Length: 108
Image (cartoon, rainbow, N blue to C red):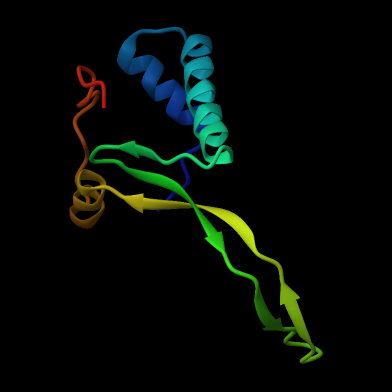
């Protein structure tokens, strides 16, 4: 298993589409920024077959410091959550790849 960076993804997409790396980088970063902005507004984002991003409220709770055993209150907060979609789940389970630009003609 290895780590794939945003730079590597941009290079792959540029090679697949024939677009300039600079243009692909702007689109990818813009896409990621919009996901962050929408989650910041508390909105849900659904990408069919890929997954769903949403925001959950975590209630205030009491935790314990493992070193001192002191009880501390952890304040309530909002957190982002991702739930895996059908196609991603299937590909991860089988180790198969999705065809390049499989959803290129879809608006979803």
